[in-house]
Amino acid sequence: MVKTASTMLPLGTTAPDFSLLNVDSKTVSLADFADAKALVVIFMCNHCPFVKHLASGLAEFGRECQAKGAAVVAISSNDVANYPDDSPEQMVHEVENRGYTFPYLYDEDQSVAQAYKAACTPDFYVFDADKKLAYRGQFDASRPGNDVPVTGEDLRKAVDAVLAGQEVPEPHMPSIGCNIKWIAGKEPAYFNSAGTA
Image 1: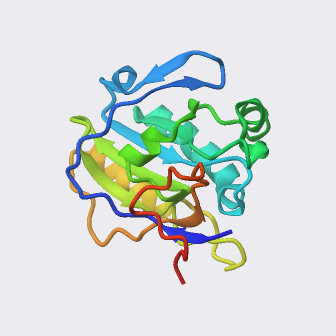
Image 2: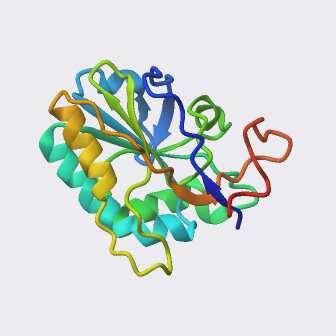
């Protein structure tokens, strides 16, 4: 496991397009969220201990966001040939077991992760009604083993600010997690195999 931080994509970046298969075998695209006042995009996977640590909190966060009129979509981009626990079949079970109410999409060729400059699982992005990046960073300060409770404080505040038409105050703290498991030879230029301290 390589501990990796978000690349911190520049604020104001337009959400890169995507059109990917959901766990229900239906295609979900960025255009499906055109009317959302806020859109949360989460790069995650099934097996990562950092994602597992937040999973119940993520499920609760997803339901809360949807009730407020914000959209949430999760994307898994890991190399499933070498990480079969992250396969689309296992993603179906993950949704059932965790109670996720948001789409969980499979980015087979990893092009969407690269377009978002996603680096770790979990990696979080919040876009405003115009699909401009308003926040990128951590769910909260909780990490496996640091005894900080999982609250989703940072991401919740970001979504609430966007829904209120306000800027998300900086600083935005990078998310930390496992590196995305890139297909051999497809590692993006921003991938740091040494990870972060």
